[in-house]
Length: 319
View 1: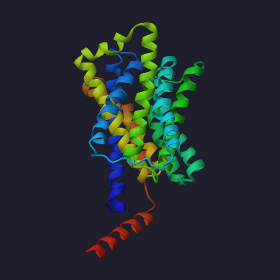
View 2 (view 1 turned 90 degrees about the vertical axis):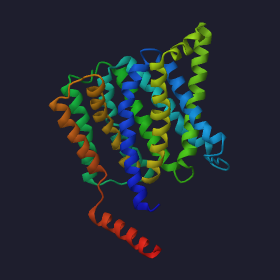
View 3 (view 1 turned 60 degrees about the horizontal axis):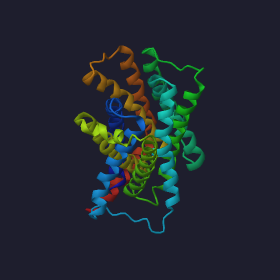
View 4 (view 1 turned 120 degrees about the horizontal axis):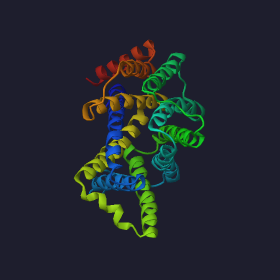
């Protein structure tokens, strides 16, 4: 696969990733009607780790960790999924979903700053303004829906801001590890760490309270099982694989801005499945987001021409 086609696939995966995340909010709401956040996370990562273990056990997916810095991937897993989901759960306990949506939109800015500091990634003024435009689109949508940030709620805001930093840190570190690990190797360790950690905490908590049956009781519901399979297999496994692949091709700052597309998908999912009305503010904000994503990933014209010319030269030589 040429570098040009690899980049096109990366952009496709980035859009797919945002689409899945957008729908995951809907399935997470359904799952939380049946189980606690911790139990939901435990079963979610159990499903994702079990499914990915199948091709690993049968040798269809080759993993090679020999001589590689495993401690770095474990640190990566500490940021995402462990840090991200734990901080998100506590943040939502003390803050509204609107506040979470607004603050999460700032993740691309945090990623851009960390990528500049640790990876020495550079962005043009136009790209910086494009990232700000995408963030403004998300904030505009939530603000017009009556959502805002209650500055008196410092604990909730603090946890949600740390959630942004956790995901930004993951994006930057995954990008730095792309030359040493394959996307599958990073993903398998991430999911395995999430599964083991959340399982230990959940089993210990239920064991101490004598409520172990409550952990598996929701599995009697087909609706819950379907939601967990989506969250575990599609929203955790597929997005981890695709995002780790994208970060092996695109810079962390370019990848992160795609996350704001999930807001548009959430609006569409709410309209289709929950009958929610799409307002003019949602349309305007969505346009801001899309323009911001396109602008942040826009190459300079001479750079794009050089890339296409290089691809044509290689293709001509090959033929």
